[in-house]
Structures are given as structure tokens and as C-alpha cells.
Image (cartoon, rainbow, N blue to C red; front, top):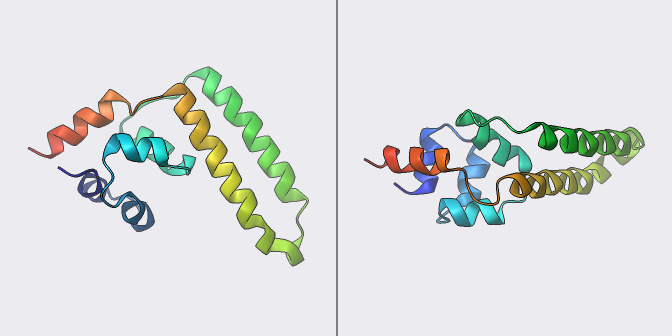
Length: 114
């Protein structure tokens, strides 16, 4: 089964399905810059992040919230690059803890193709 089809089966958001396109699991894992999508996939497979990951994520989250607090209503459009940078930091952090797609996801993808 193609990874894109597997994501559809999991009810992934359409932007994620579109972004994956013809990428396989490994390529998508290594190229994704949206930590929210990666965490969603981990959670869909009941993969719990280790404490060290959660600690580092808390630091990233705090910095993100601090930056957003500095932006008032007149500058909401400036939020987009901050959001993108946040998602990329989270994706990078996820790959530090899971350098390769977790086996549970690869196995589920293979089973789904049967």
C-alpha cells in the first residue's frame, strides 16, 4: 500500500495527504518539516515520546508562546513564519528521537496493504 493511501485510511488531513504525494514512509519522514503531522502519526500508532523529548518540546513550546505573545493583532500575518519555524523545530526534534520512521508505523503500513 502506498503511504499516501495509508494516511487516507488513517483519516489524515488532506494537506498532509497532498504533501506526501508519491513519497514513501521513509522519504516523507526525513523530508517533513511539520512536527504536528509527525506527532499525529506517532500518536495514531500509540508511540509515546520519552521524557527527554517532552522536556525539550516544553522548551520549544515556551519559546513559541513567548514569541507569539509579542505579536499584537496588527501583526498577525507575521505569525506564519513563526509557526513554520516552530513546526520545523518540532519535526527536527522528533527525528532526533526517531531517526527512522518507527517500526510500528512501517509494520502497520505493510499490514494495511494486505
